[in-house]
Image (cartoon, rainbow, N blue to C red; front, side, top):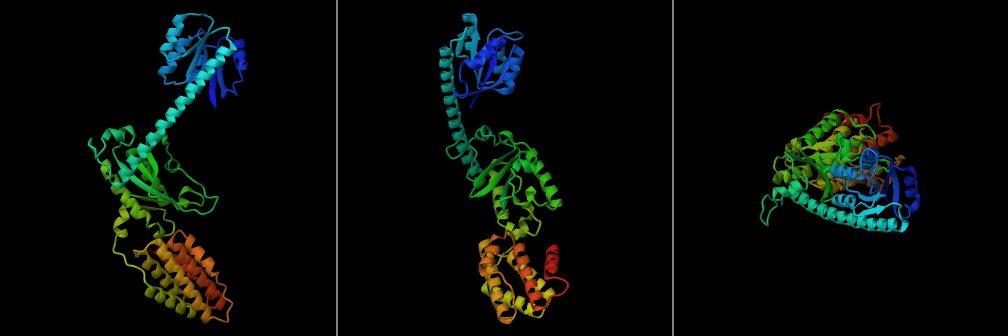
Length: 430
């Protein structure tokens, strides 16, 4: 729906203009009116209407002055000049400021309607052209962002590179850049969604502070400039010192970030580091929601691959310690299992499959040992589904400990302390 502003010093004319046409049917809604030039200029700049019906002679400011000042202030809307005087000097002055229609009073309905239809066509064509340009601009910007983070962007004016002016034209220039990748891992429908601007408590009008886009199915943020990086550091400092509350932004997202870089052809280095770190989210400890480039040395240590021999070793140990009610050894074994998996080179999917096989094998062995007990294990499908939907390794380890405690309670081997308490102790000691 387009908007219409009416400015005339005679109230009855303003009321007549409201009724002379069915504005709603024509696609216009009246957003304001004014009875003198100063009110008209203020209303136009405040409401930025699509179209202004403007009397040429009004108190305080003339219609020509209003148009001139409005244009100087960046107003791009259309004007229809209304006048009781057939003075071509006014028409010439109005044309200078892009006014296409000059109607004399009394206003003829057909003449006004014809002008409105022409303006509607112009507005539609201008909007289509603007959308067309915006689509191409977005496409070009996304192509440059893709090349910046993948290391294929090159500075220069040759066919193999882009001039730095292209970055400036796309508002990608800065004194420093940093790449952040985030994942939202809440599964519940009521989990809230937050924009990155809300997290940093900034406005990002025109994408002046950061760019948000998708690369290789990852949610990527490219921070631009010292101000953006400083706000990000403040944000990290706050959430790393305070455990996120349920329902807070950091309760359902995880951030991985690469190093700050000072040349556009180095942005890919920050992106690659963030990619390496985001793959380690699953292995973070309870309450950890960020992982930064400073922790890369620990992440990049030599890794091993998981094996069936280790699966049987952990299964036998856990079942044996459970039989002897050795609670502390159960907790120690689960902690050892977590450390073993933390240093694996295998994918998260393979780690979850390993843990699923381990749990199902434990369940089978325990049911054989305690065939006369009423041990209430979850169904196999429930076990598989639970492990598959866990976002962190520690969640699965705690799930193991809860099930072990349930077995001990059923078989009469539990003590006042719980295996869960020991597991939490070991996790806190990391």
